[in-house]
Length: 356
Image (tube, rainbow, N blue to C red; front, top):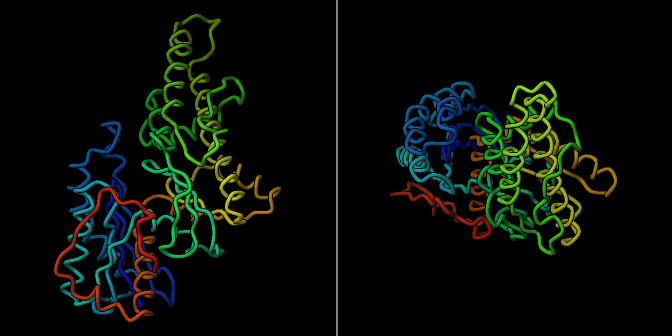
């Protein structure tokens, strides 16, 4: 079964071809970072217009690379939410229209389900059940995962997600967008322990997250430390070094909370497998911390391949293929055939999905 996947939820246009027998055949990704960087964040209208320009050329590219013709497609999967409404409409409109023209099922995919399942594309995939940490610019959640579509929310962010905390801290430090990679790069030259930032809700009784207070603490620290460092006084520290030291502590604070809550979720559920997915899952320090925890706690931690950490079409094609396979097994695949329309859901709780 061959599925074309289309991802247009935010600022990356991803298209991929997945075969349930041969695996991922081809994928292509266009990032809009350069376009949005000058504005310090994603501009929804510009994102939507760029998706319109990119989807069809990328689709032709991956089909050619995979050696697959349109007539060989068994389904078209697209991201239906959550995300930016205009951006979602581009992928959904093209995906549903293509499926209708070909007479094949159109499969609306939950963006976070795509991320959650992306480690299953690796050479060493996790097995159900497991706990999933979904961590990105817009989401920080812990899920108990019993199977495809069988998700129970364990903890959620009450305000800023971890990725937002990285982005906002980077802006305060005068770094570029996106903030996560910029903070991580600068932190490599930072001195550990020079500063101490709060670890919000680290010792709370629940599994929820909150990073808005961390952002405020970073703002206070930057305003206190950097103006004096830039005064020209030879006795004051180098401002670039201070920025690196602050970046190091920002990364330490965020990753410490993520790791502690994840380990607590494993303990509370009795699971021994943790899956980490989403854009922040590419963070090297987070991977180091969890690798160290894995050795002493008798658990296994799975990450997606680095190329699949950001938004991508491969995860959408894969998730769509799993959904279609489940419907076919139940004799219900005809419900998706030749769609007459489509809808997108900018807000869409992951735990509201039906089991596959």
